[in-house]
Amino acid sequence: MVRTSSPGKVILFGEHAVVYGEPAIALAVTRRFKMNVRPRDGGKGHLVDGHRMTAAHHSYFKYAVENYWDGGPLDIATDSEIPSSSGMGSSAALTTSLMGAFVELSGGTIDDERERIARQSFATEYGVQGRASPTDTSTATMGMGVLLAKGPMDGLLWHVERGGAEWYIHRVDVPQLNIVVGFTGIKGNTGELVAKVRRFWESNNFAKETVADIGKLTMEGVEALNAGNVERLGELMDRNHQMLSILGVNHPKLQRLVEAARPHSYGAKMTGAGGGGSMIAITDEPERVAKAIQDAGGRPFIAEIGAPGLRRDGD
Ligand code: PMV
Image 1 (cartoon, rainbow, N blue to C red):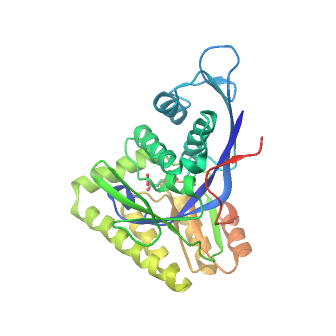
Image 2 (cartoon, protein in one colour):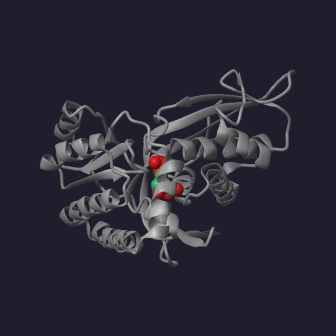
């Protein structure tokens, strides 16, 4: 049996625009998706948490198994600390954990195969969602901080190209920040939200400009992070949130949580695909912001960032 786990993530800047090859910054959080994977003794077909694996219920598992596993039937048991469809990258953490288990079950080691795991996990997300960026899968694989940029910079890990977009994936230092996450409790469907932005982007120049503006703002965010300028970071987060609202992925409850957090924060924005899902705030008063989010009807948690990436856990 192999036990693996991968971290969830928050996107500090650049979600949605990154699907078009614009930059993005994501930070791994200590909440993890864990799984045990073992060859099934007897019986046909793969099991997930005791149920037969189906495309309807286990789309990521099924795609990954069909494309990247050539052994016999598997028995997979999952245990996730990341709510699904919350904007915290649970599907990417699931996929990378599974891909890591495939490597270890085949006699390889995760550390030798990180790049391949990240590439195959991205291909899986892309295959299931119809379109995606490598943000979540790179962050789940590598942990810590990840920057997707339009060209090579310090800390370059690898380069990915798909569907007319390309990304240079980098490791970045994890900043010293207090981040509070607020989950609306409303599940956002990433595939549908990405498709919605796509339709807007295809039909409208203003949407194209907004996507490009998010890209520029993200690189300003990189500078603010390097300079340790939290005020500037917060200001940029507020603007990023506004641009995402223009792209049509905000939600009234998400907006309520963002507004509740702002009086005690440097900045606040939605994180991930939106349409519900989660928001993040940067603050010196995490407890106070968590309470404000809770009072506004959200589910807060104070995120610990700088989590390690995909790993094999003790048996
Ligand atoms: O909500 P999540 O965790 O699925 O994040 C999606 C991030 C997007 O930029 C909207 C899509 C992507 O593939 O990058």
